[in-house]
Length: 450
Image (cartoon, rainbow, N blue to C red; front, side, top):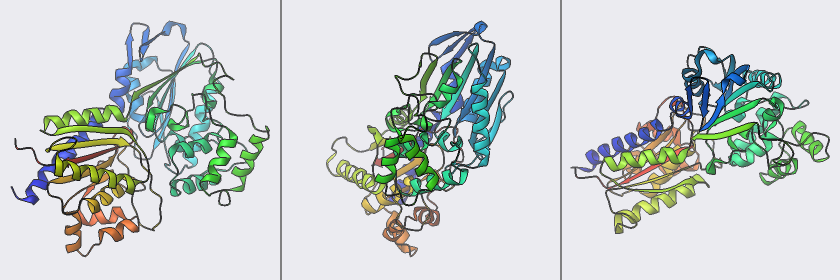
């Protein structure tokens, strides 16, 4: 089989492996697996609730996957739902019967998100001890719940979000700042809803599944402080660029003029249940199973990969070349899988995202290698500010590009991976995937004979 035909087969395999990972963490199914109703008894991730003891059931939520999470909740609870509201990214909605849906801006917040956050907080605040709130949370919830303290305008939050995203900040750093500018994040929603019972079902998009970081943890104790938030801004070199209102607010919090987010020891959390119902490892395990079924020896490297995208891509490329040359640590045909979420420090003026940049940096590293394919994709279907989930590349990518007059290294230098792969027709475009568990990276080395 010639190299082009081999590459084509391996590319199809990589896409099938990626899709298998997505299907394993689909939001509607995740909620249906977490909730079970038998008579008046609701099981939520194994904990039982007697619905006869509750006057109302409220469904609230936010995040890119929250609409399909809400659809799953409606299937289980149906007419028992009294009221609900979820906020999702534009284009990520679905038809709901009992729960109101608001679409809003992400990753930069907008007025729709602000209005939805205010309405969600009001519903939570008006709840009582005989109310059950099921809160549906997924990645993206931070940007979709932009309800700031008095004195901080929406424009201030938009500028802060854009600055931090462009700086290469980690989600932990970004959400430390967000929590301390918010009236709803960092456990404040749970604080407002007390003593109502809260069951938060979570689709994790955070390395290590840190509950306080996923969507800035609206129903979780917050270990970070105002000091941490201001220090983070300084570490990112953004103190002089940040809106004055945000810096002034954080400084006021340090002086005790704004209440700190609720801590594990400062609030009674017994009325709150937080449960992870889908995560990156679950997607990777399903991808592994698919790869094995296609005939690949499979190695799951880690679900916790972080760091600068280009560096991570070079390391993955080196591992793939080692497998090809020495059959260490596994023999070809092989599939190396990893997850997590890397960061891109933007130096150029191009268009792209961390997954496309990974695929491009890996293409440069494995240039000339036979029978080697790389796919990197965001499980939410969106890579950076683009319509692509990621991209696929192989050992022939840079040579193909050169024949078209495209210099892969130049596109990488300008952070313009989107236009590079668009020209090669190698973007991975899925549309909304109805989930969000960070990224999947797939490296195939050698073609199965069967």
